[in-house]
Amino acid sequence: MKKKPSPSSDLPFETFTWAQVRDEVKVPGNGEEDSDRVLVLTGSVVIPHDLGLDFRQGLFAQDDEDAPPFTGLIVRGDLTVEGCVLNWENDFGPFLQVHGNLVAKRIAMGGARLHVTGDVTTEDLVAVYNHGSVFVGGNLKARTLASHYAFTVVGAVEAHRYLGQDSKVFAVAGGVEDTRDPYDAKGVFVPAVVADGRVELDKARARLAAGKPIARDAFTSIREAFRQLVAKKLAEPDKVKSLSLEDKGLTSLPEELFLFRKLEKLNLRRNNLRALPEALGQLTELRELDLRGNGLLELPDSVGSLTKLRVLDLEANCLWRLPESLAGCVELRRVNLVNNPYASVQRAFGSWRQVQLMFDFPEVLTRLPKLEVLTFEGTPLRTLPARRFDSATLSQATVLRSLVTHVDPALHAQLQVDVERSRESAAAYVGYWFRPETLRLESFYDAKADRHDFAEVLALLALLLRITIPVAAPYEETLEKFRVRSQEIARHLDWDGDKPRHVHALFGALRDALGPLGEPYPGDALIAGLRDVFAALAG
Image: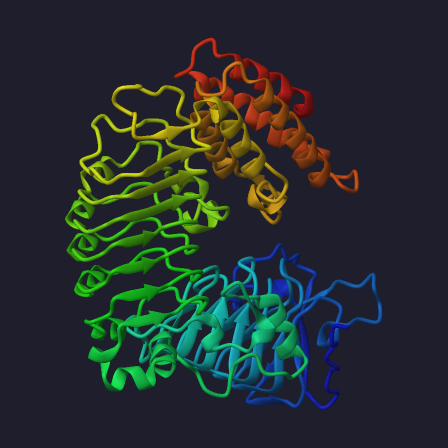
C-alpha cells in the first residue's frame, strides 16, 4: 500500500492563489488555474516526516473536494525533510520550490516538479519518469542517483549515477564522471531493484517510500568485481592458460584481462558484451575464444592478431559483418555463426532503426587456409561467396535456415545449403518480431502529449519487407503470419475495449507506409496483400 505522509500541524503554512505567486514560481507549468491554491512556508523549515507530492494527499489534502486544489509548495528558505520527498504519480504532482537548500533523507520523484535554488543533499535520489522535472541551482550530493532522464544541476554532482535503460553506473565527483571505471547496476544497487542489468526505478521508489535501502553497503565496479574473481590468478598472470568468465554479467572487459598474455582458452559465454576492445589482439596465444550468447554487434579489427586461434564460437550474437582482418587467423579451424541475430536483436542495437543484419556472406571466411567446420543456421544470409574456399581441409560447411534461393553447383560445391526452406525462414522473422511484445502501446504512444510516433514500428516493417521480398514469393505463409500477428497485436492494444483509436492509428500508419516502402518493389504481391491485412484493422 502506498504510504500517505501526514501533514504537520505545527508548520506555519500560508495559502495563496496561483495568480498571486505565479511570477515567483520557477517550475514548468502544469496547467494551473488562477484560483488554484499554493502553500507557502517562510524561513528555514524542518518537516519531521515524509513530504508527499501527490494531489489531494498529505499536505495537499483538502476537506472540500469542490474547492480549488493545492497545486504546489513554496519554501522561502531552507528545507529539511527527515523522511522522503515522495511523488507516486508518474504523470503529474504538486510542485516543490525551495528558495534555499534542500536536505532530505531520501528523494523519490515521479511526474512532480522540483526546483531548488541552492544545494540538494540526500542519501538516494530516484526520478522515475520523464514527465517530471528536477532543477538544482547549486550542488547535488547523493550516495546514488537513478533516473530515466538527465535533469539540470547548475553546480557539481557527487553521486554514483545511473541514467536508465542499459546504461552503466558511473561515479561522479566534482561534476566529473569517471568513465574509466564503470559499475554494473548490480554492483551498486540491491538485487530487489535490479532485473536484466537494469534498475527498476518504480521498485526503487517503493523501497525508498518504505524506508528500505536501494543501494548496497559497498559498491563494486566492473573492474573490481573482475579482480575479486581472478585475484589469485592475477598474482602470476603468465601461468594462466584457461579462464572462464561465463554468466558473469559483464558489459565490458576489464583492462586486467589483458594481463593474461599466455591465455590459450577464454570463455566469455552469456554475458552482455555488445563490443570488444581492440586490446583483444594482445592475447596472441589464444587457441579458443567462446563468445556465445552476448549480443555482440561487431568484432574488433584486432581479432586478426590472434594468429594461433583455432576455435571461434560466435553463436547467438547480433553480428552483421566480420572484419577483413579475420583472414590473419591462419590457424582457425572451426567457426560457429548459428543464430546471428539472436532473439534480443532490438535491445542489442538499441532500436529497430539501428538494426543491421548479415545479409551478405562474409567472404573473409573463404580465405582461412585451415578451416575445417563452418556453421551458419538462423542467419539471414541472402548471398553466398563469389569465390571458392582456400582451405583444402574443409569438411563441413552448412548454411541452414537462411534466405538463400540460388546455389551455383560448381562454385558452392563445398557448401550444404537448404534453399528449399528460404520461404519458411523469411516468414519466421515476421513471427519472431511482429508481435504484441514488440508493438506495445508505450512503444509508439506518448500519453502525456497524446501523440503517436510510429518511427520504430515503420523501421521494423521496412526491415521485414527487406527480409521477405523477393525470397518468400508467393507469400502465402508470410501473409498468414502478418494476419495472425496483427490480430494478436490489436487484441493486446485494446484488451479492455476502450483503446480502439490506438489500433486504428497503428494499422493506419502501417497501411499508409506501404506506399513509400513499396516503391522499390513495384507490383509486389506481398505489398498488396499487406494493404488488405492492415486496412482491415485501420478502421
